[in-house]
Image (cartoon, helix red, strand yellow):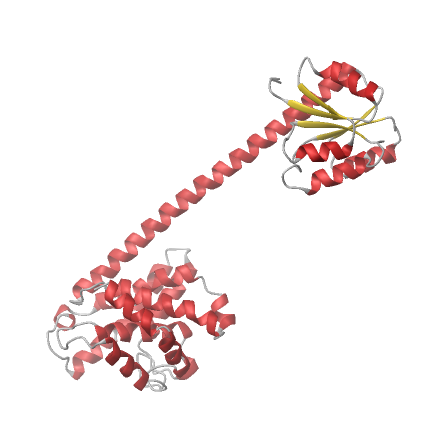
Length: 358
């Protein structure tokens, strides 16, 4: 075994023991001798050895007290400690090992035996550190791979969402804006104390990713309706309303071939419920009040605000102040009244988001 640069601290209150131990080790290791546990602990604040040989029976502070302190500190806990003692009873040995010592050698000791046991424990510690390093590298590799997969997933989702935007004649990054509005509301919810228990169970990162798919059902709507420059007829509007149901069905179909159920659960809820209204006049199911999933009620505010401040073939963009007024007029009718008040708390942030993404 390679022993160059390995350092051993030898601690004993007996000068003779220090001299004998140092003579036995100095040919193979860098040895530093100390005559008390207190001096050892002081030195460990600035210098760490590869192994400690520690006498048990010392004045002021015995070896048992010293090792308790060594093992209690993250900086020194990993250092192998071998007890050197004249005590040969099993109880003393068991106590030393229980406190974290890796070995227990009876004095007077055989120099060759001491060297062999030190070599063994240094080898074990070296292999342990190699294993820790390997595990850390493996975790880094897994993390990097996971990040790549997530980035690929987000890229695919963004492409699908942009395809819907393109077919719907919507420009100006509707998806990015609604994600940002949703994020602003989700950040404010815990601060207000609203729905704290339910929100705590959500994976917010996945919720925001899934928001990209809230309009995915528009893929199933005819271009002649999606791209109509004027207002829709009643019949055409009935067809456009089906995009919520189609979106839910598309996501359910995807769920059949994937294990990422949490992400898709969020996406399904957003797709089917973001056009429901608090008073029950929304679609597709005519849900009212708390029957509407909380996530759908939050998304409704983000989606409507963006529709209001964005130009469409059939209307000009409203100002931020006008959009805020319309949403507050819809409080208790279109929108959850408590969430409408929450929107007011972050409405300035909504305006900044709209300006940044236009």
